[in-house]
Image 1 (cartoon, one colour):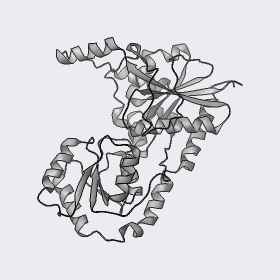
Image 2 (tube, rainbow, N blue to C red; image 1 turned 135 degrees about the vertical axis):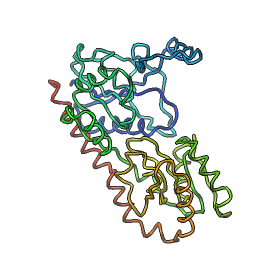
Image 3 (cartoon, helix red, strand yellow; image 1 turned 90 degrees about the vertical axis):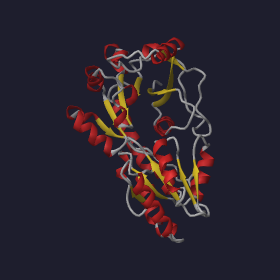
Image 4 (cartoon, helix red, strand yellow; image 1 turned 90 degrees about the horizontal axis):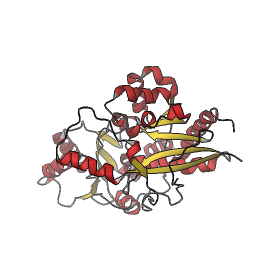
Length: 353
């Protein structure tokens, strides 16, 4: 029996990435929902000549007036790449060739490569595709706006992962609003846990490192001696969960994100989250778990953290249980499966299978 194959494009990446994790989870679930649907992931990387070209341009400070974005014709499939098992499921079905069948394949392209459909002439080739926007701020994949707009115009579906992204996209491209499908992702709360809390504060230094270093400097002479701040950088998923389960506070330095995942995971591990929403986080940033700080206000950030430490109650985790249950339901597997079924129904209309 012929199947519709939903193919996700992704760059080769070895470390943790919330966006990649969402795509892998969607692909895994799509393979289980209906018998006539399959899903694979194609990992792309730059050819060596393309890497050298980019490196040389940077060294010689060659400025191209028109930023054309990544060129898919100078990239190749990463045949032997497999995502880190510390973070991603080993059962990911990877496609080893970038070959597409217009009769069965539906391509989903990340917003970071939203100009690819024009470079690859997908419309002329009869290849149906959608664009997945997880971060509105990453849509400017090329300065060739005409090319970018054409890619969105010819897309069959525009998948968007947050209310914030939807609002921004509608304001920018009101003529394409009927193409939008809100696609949910889920947080696997079964993996997350709450252990005995210690006087620990966690944060991710890869997010706005200048801001986090300034905050740490501000706190050097002010943080109570029985408290410690622990960076979570290049760690396994198990180590991350273990650390979050024991810490009392998580500092968010989310920056220009469609929907930051780490603050949600920290909250479900029983942390009080203080910091930046990143934009998309506004849809879940609610008291008493989340404390909002305007991006860049280091002084207020530090004062707020010190205030919360001073007034922290031992029964806070118990008192906020209902709030965590609400958050868990907001990003449940049930909601994710529902939107994936909507995606399947929309895609199925384009094929005679």
